[in-house]
Length: 305
Image (cartoon, rainbow, N blue to C red):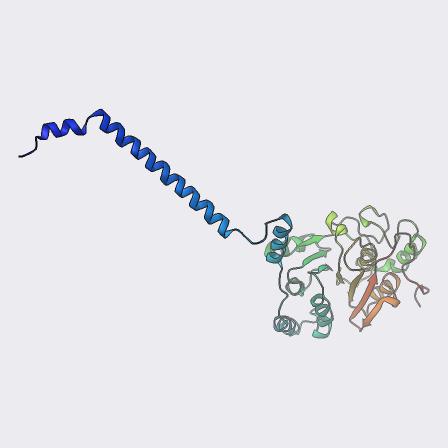
């Protein structure tokens, strides 16, 4: 017999039947939720690391991630080769570039490299000191600004020199007379009143422990030109006043055949610290000193000898 469709509809809509269906759905949803939560907890327990994640492990991981590799030797040799190919007399030769490059390559950590003078080798120094800190100091404010604008990766600052090459003898004599006062070999030059001390550089320059310093500026060899007296003196003080890092600083002086370069190097970098020298490049290894030391060199020669 054909079922009565009207009666069937009444049975399906009976309140008791509806209540039972809703209750079953709620229990089913609760069961599924509980099962899903239990599965997730089991998954987390089974896949957790064998060692706990601690602050030390995070630091170690970050250190490993940021570790950088040095430039390959073939790349360094290629850069030196092409940089020394120019016939321009203002370019350094391969024999001048190589000792500086070798020192940069041997740094145990990325080097802190300070250069007095923006020259044809500026981009080369930046490239060779791969991953290190490279800062340039120049006497020409406009050239420093132009160079930074053209090469944003270059960190360059200008400085006002107040010396003249013709004052060489007077300035050296003044420093000798004030080695226990304003011209001490160990001091914070930011607060120095020594005539040869550069005290208007950015503050952070005095706070960095420089591993390598190159004096290749300021430019000019006429009597009223600034000369490199202040740059060499400042390099000597920065090397002796280091607070940390390596105990010794490599200081290179370019154009070593000049009177100012040789006299000031002997006076403030000292012959006992001379590693090697040619007519064009002097290489000194200057050691950090105690702040109670008031003598640049163990043996001071008479000026002009």
